[in-house]
Image 1 (cartoon, rainbow, N blue to C red):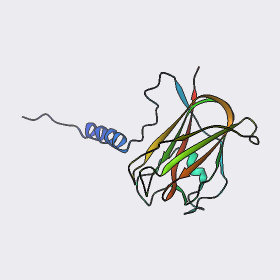
Image 2 (image 1 turned 180 degrees about the vertical axis):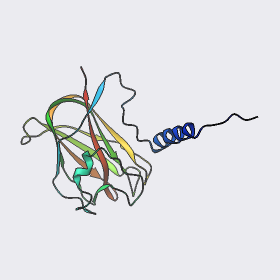
Image 3 (image 1 turned 45 degrees about the horizontal axis):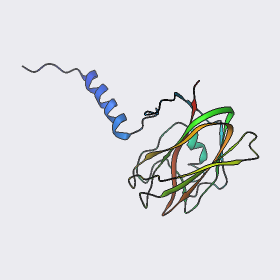
Image 4 (image 1 turned 120 degrees about the vertical axis):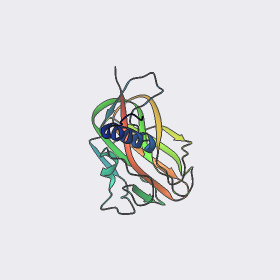
Length: 179
């Protein structure tokens, strides 16, 4: 005779499966440092999103909600444009990692480069570094992880450079190094 499987058990397995299948893991693994997610207080873009700009603005990059993979979701999009996006963390933090939830559309290496600049006052930015080599399956969301080691600043300006279709971003996260 077969054992009775409770519906609550099946529901738990279903929820866990969805989290693992969608790849929306928020923790940083594989690093000996300890991190804490720091929410950005404000975000501004040098140019507005080019598609659904009024409805899907840059504030969606810091709302904590991840869009689904695919074309018509809640992606913040700059078609054929490279914006500079400035984030204010509200106070100086020691940031170890920035994570960008993005989706390539035209080519798997569409997010060609990410330039990171830092500032303590929000006016005078200094180039920290440029990162490249972000590759993911076309039409599928992925995390681009930028290791800053340990940068102490309040303001971060990120400028992506696309090749192909443009930039589709869903979320930007700042991870502070805990002492």
